[in-house]
Image 1 (spheres, rainbow, N blue to C red):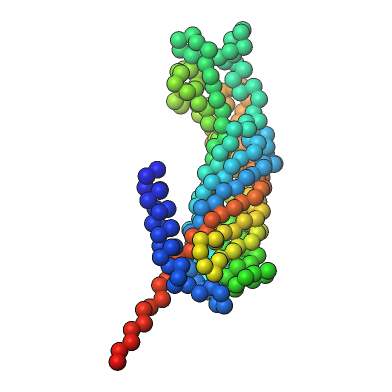
Image 2: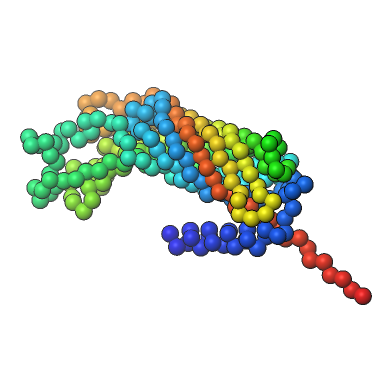
Length: 253
């Protein structure tokens, strides 16, 4: 985590040092774009049968051209705790309705949603309702990779049936192609740190099961059919533009 904080600090420092060297008021500029973003996502399609509400936290890195086109790549970490798969450990529950660890104590088994998406994207800022030519309605499309699974935690206890590779028989790992769309508003301030974009985003994952067997359903063949994993929600991002310094002017008598 220390390296990430150093990177963020350096980006902030560059942005601060460059604030006085830009002119976005009356001209469209080309500049690197780096953002830290958060998304709140609802699920649909096949995904809703496994996961409910999910959070997205990630970063975007790219470049905005003088024509307000934005090219870049983003990576997002998906997380949540709304698991929709029922009866996952029914065969591990004893007559008292509990799961026991290797010492015979009642085990606490926690389930979480986890995932990752990595996408390349192309976007466009339309100078509508804008304070300067670099702000306005922001549209983008992306394509990349999506993976999601159920994370199983037994804390400090040891449940032999749920340790190490045995967890793979329950995690429902799925991976595949990912498509994204975004519509919102991007704002680049004439001065200061108030640079952001926000709006609605949509995501369609065309995934496949990555496991050959589900231990909770050993006699049921794992489907090899493609799944349609839908997500939609809102995304907010703090934009850290990095501007080139203007050359210093020297005067000689």
